[in-house]
Length: 133
Image 1 (cartoon, rainbow, N blue to C red):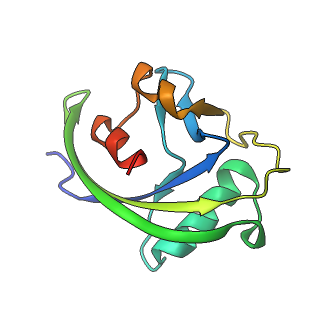
Image 2: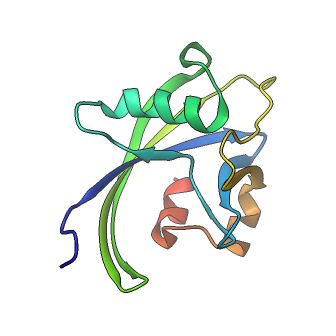
């Protein structure tokens, strides 16, 4: 029997010089916004700080202007398993002098020019229009 839960995921849009910071899944060659699952008892904002620290080593005091932007509900099947997730999307700022380097082996981070977003595999696919408005 499949796990019948709804995943709640915080996603963060970080823009710099007309580029968006994206994570790249090394194994499957697709991109997604930085962020991660909200754990029981954590607020969305706490999850933003936690995930930015875990993935990039960015300290809480270096992340500013966290603003709620939108949400996206997504249902899909992967490897025969049904998934249902709610993506809570925020914008945030980090200092320009921070070197963006992954602290996790399975992902890389890249600054992708906004005009090139349409040429990459960004998941969930319905999230791309939310980057531009």
